[in-house]
Length: 413
Ligand SMILES: C[S@@+](CC[C@H](N)C(=O)[O-])C[C@H]1O[C@@H](n2cnc3c(N)ncnc32)[C@H](O)[C@@H]1O
Image (tube, rainbow, N blue to C red; front, side, top):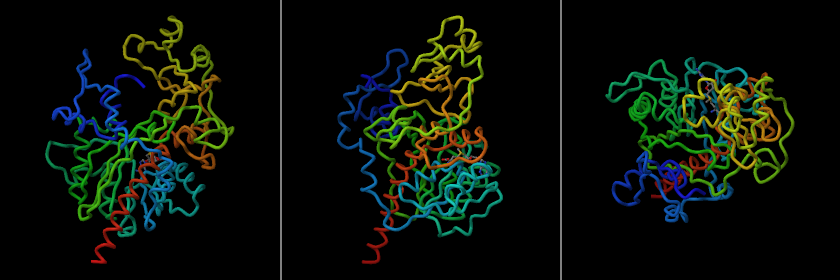
């Protein structure tokens, strides 16, 4: 581990938000140092020690420690190929209905879980009234769109025309105990943070207390990939229950864990189709060693390959990148040969195959993806990693169990 951690790295490791750490710094509870040039807060790795006993956990124990008191039901919106859905299912939640507009993604869900109620349609056309009182949780990775926000508190109608509106409408129509939105980190700063503020204000208006949003790093939840997801959790205001974000796991997995037999998977990755690089790109990537990127190329090829980006500065460590066996993979995208986000196989000069992609997202090998190869990559690249969803699902169960215990205590009184 490095001697110093950025505030974001430290926050992830100790399971606190960066806002909490800044407050603790201001209040003198946990004082950060300052990076001399940027003046950003940094932390010494020794400062982790005060958290060590309480924060890092062995995720494998979650299965035994947290199980549902009664079957809890989920309505999953924008369900894609089911990364979030099967992670929640693995945690012990029951998906009663899933909505998805994309035909191939819906076909994937139907193929793997014929008993799931898959509603293949634009969410705008669906009424969720019939699920009122039938679901405990509504989840959804709504695509991020701006809505006008003039600093005032927003109501549901102010978001009309956006997919977040449809998510909030489904929550309002079904009244679950918990609603969970997932999104990209970029939502934090979208429109200067106002989009997220507006979303929180809307959920508040329809009766949900929203926790401070948190960016979860998948590498801390048994996923061999540096992917991040922003999680937004709302709890129905009449309920006296609390949600905690999942604690980071002790183990960090690498590409080797994804593709070879080991702790994460019981066999080597099965063969499957995959795309190829165009010959010109293949010749360039051939020159990059495992763990390397465009800076490892001879200077003339760097300039030729990077074109204008060569002069723009910044690391661009994702360009002409070959992943090494001993590191977690960089975030997978929807198309694996795309420029600026190459993730070349460590030994062979090619993108990862479909099944390799799925492994890096911790999908089980049995999970089939429907449609042409490009549609399969897209579904996998869009997904919430299954093991991250599992960790969130366990905390959802812990929260819902509080509700059940509360109910039975009331009945006894
Ligand atoms: C980020 S992906 C969801 C990933 C999914 N949660 C998973 O873990 O696999 C967002 C999904 O929303 C779907 N979508 C976009 N617009 C939609 C709409 N109007 N109605 C229903 N689904 C929509 C997309 O097709 C895409 O599959």
